Amino acid sequence: METIQYILKSAGILSLFYLVYIFLLKKETHFTFNRLFLLIGVLAAAIFPIIQFTKTIIIEAPALASFPSTETASETLSSSAFNSNYSIENILLYIYVLGVIVFSLRFIYQLISLFIILENHPYKLSNNCKIIEVSESISPFSFFNYIVFNPTLHTNNELAMILAHEIAHIEQLHTIDVLASNLLLIIQWFNPLAWGYKSSIVENLEYLADRTTITRINSKKEYQLALLNTSLASPLSAPTNKFYNSFIKKRIIMLNKANSNRQNAFKAMVVVPLLTIFLWGFNVNEVKKYVEIPSENNKVKTDKVKEKAFQPVLDKKDIAVITTIEPVTESIAQKTPKAIIKKQSPLQETYRVKIDKNTTDASLQEIKEEVKSKYGLELRYAAIRNNLNEITSLTLTYTGNGNNGNYQVSQDKGIDEFFFFIDKDGKTGFWSEAVEKRRKERMQRRSLKRRERSQDMNERKMEMQERIQKRKMEIEKRRSKMKINHPTPSASPNNEAQEVQGQAKAKRQINKKASNTLYFIDGIASTKKQVELLLPENIDKVNVLKSEKALKKYGGKGVNGVIEITTKK
Image 1 (cartoon, helix red, strand yellow):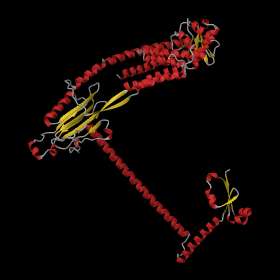
Image 2 (tube, rainbow, N blue to C red):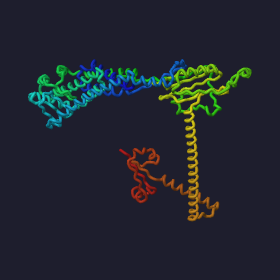
Image 3 (cartoon, rainbow, N blue to C red):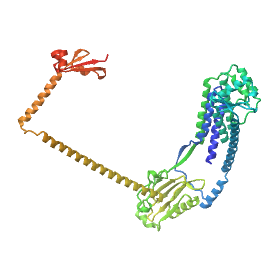
Image 4 (cartoon, rainbow, N blue to C red):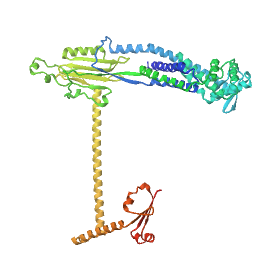
């Protein structure tokens, strides 16, 4: 079914491009643009059907209905399998494949006939073109860099124009377009517009070659006469660029037609909104998502189930399978007054029923009626099935006796089995072995990660302690060496005071010396504050003069040094 849908979508997109070309672009002389438009149409027909968009439809409080069936699961599966082998879709697919094989063989036969001609005749190399002269009565054609013609059927003047025309085909790589159009026809042989699309590609290529040729010859009139003369030859049935085609009249008309306005090419943009509408109409998959709105009198309450075997679990990894699991575990005794409890009899046994992908609608209806009659619960369900009648999406909701809950599961290949249970205390819920297994695996992974993180932290802590201890030992060693090499003099208050005073005096001398330093900016004496106001990017060079050099240049003023600054001009 998907293959047929792809083929039909591809045919629709190709037909869309073809109709835009026929009604808006065909009569224009923008041949290069038309060539690009037609090739884009071929690519779009191949790629766009694959693109799919998803639209989610949220259904609030859906009307959950059942459709009873008298067939068992095995009968339904066997009947579905039998019908799928002889369905209309499969018959159409077989016919389509047969057509593809027939047209593929036709195309291969044409290629073989062409290669026989190219292999059985010698060629002459001229301007990177392989020219082959044949004796058969065929129309001149080109294939990649091969040019084939019968010299006895044309005059020298006609041959010159024919060669110019075919060289234009070779230079512009028109053979690629011709092969692409033939492959397109194999894939869409059933589409009548595909045949017209192929003809339009070939026709536009001839317009391009004709327009190029008349710029290289002396007389447009003689070229038109050459087109008429060569129309008498029999064309070769092969994917080639032929000098003669059945639309000689159209070629002559387009040769004499004035150049179209460049703005007319923008008419091709009409295809963009049409493609958007097409994709939105046929490439959007609707996905239904059920969202239940709980009533005001029956609010969902979730507690932990005491019986471990029936503990439901919800995790991020299970969202694709189980959307919501909200079991209500509050017993009837917790919601009902004591006076009423005495009148009610407790449940004699635990109710448990298995539901899987092969559960029929009839079975779901029986479960619904049994739960209603025995336990007073209103059970509703909505099931979506595939072609094999397997449940791929199921939503269950139940209300009654102070309990509310829902369970939703969705899987492409059919849902996993799960259980709906009501225990002796009136606690109600759902349990799935697959979900329980994933929960245990998830808990194991989390526990393993916690152990790994704890171990990593302990290792880092020990490594940090070792580094601190090593650093302390290094500091102690340095201190001991300093004590040996520089013994500390006996500390006395007088010595310490003298040492502090000496340090302060030395510092004042350094500051005084720095303040007496001479500064020159571009040869002009300046202050230290003026120097500090200079921006670094404006300074070109700094020259520092000390001792003898400073005294020699500036005399006694330079005793404390001189700094010369040259700025950028």
